[in-house]
Length: 113
Length: 115
Image (cartoon, rainbow over all chains, first blue to last red; front, side, top):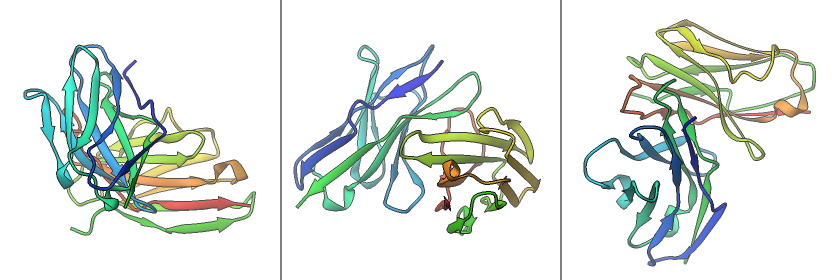
């Protein structure tokens, strides 16, 4: 079965510093990977996706993610964090068999001024 | 487009009562999903529809839960009778298609509290 793991429940970073939110995946075949963000009391919003091609994917709000096949990872990154980036971040993988989107457990990002 | 619209945003009810959550997907989207979010279990897919037809309801927790999509612009998730353990935020999401695009458009959620 396809799955993703987010090893950190929470990530703390100072404003202006680079941030990384980790995600590893377990799939058979080529993965379709996604990142979503959830702000307080809101629904999830799509940030970016990897389907094929360039391993560095750029998305909304200055975020990017690097697909690493050898490490089976798809970490979310941003060069300079903003306080407004504080939110819950979900990694997800498309199950090729069922077409369902399987979400990770989420990582809470806290950016301190 | 107004996005995915859910109602009510908040619902507080007593155990044993019937709860109906409503969703209006984005016009033109063929897929509709119901998710449940709790601290303990994270984000769980309950059921999804394609062109108003339920495709996979394996995530529906038990017979107390039912979902319908009578037309392309409306879906309901019903819990009868409700129990305190049903307390959660329920999200509806829609998508124009599946496959490799994967982008789901979520509503703001319905926060259910069962006392």
